[in-house]
Length: 65
Image (cartoon, rainbow, N blue to C red; front, side, top):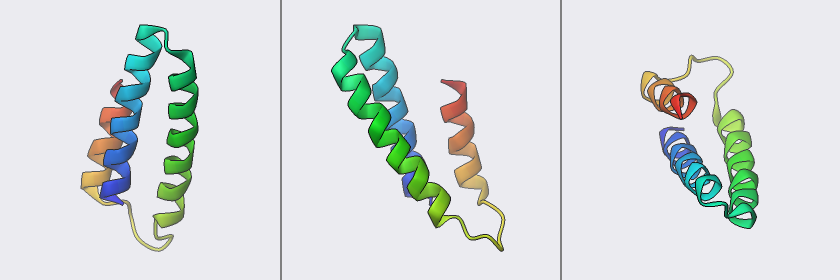
């Protein structure tokens, strides 16, 4: 889960850069990749256990962007 969260952070940062540069085709591809990663993260989350603190910290970084 932590690896997926870090990947989401990286893709989100790249998406922000692509949008700032006006590279909309790249932004569209990054949005699709981010959606796939978010789906994977949701699927990897065990229903019977809380989300690890390290993952929550990375999610907070993504939300701050």
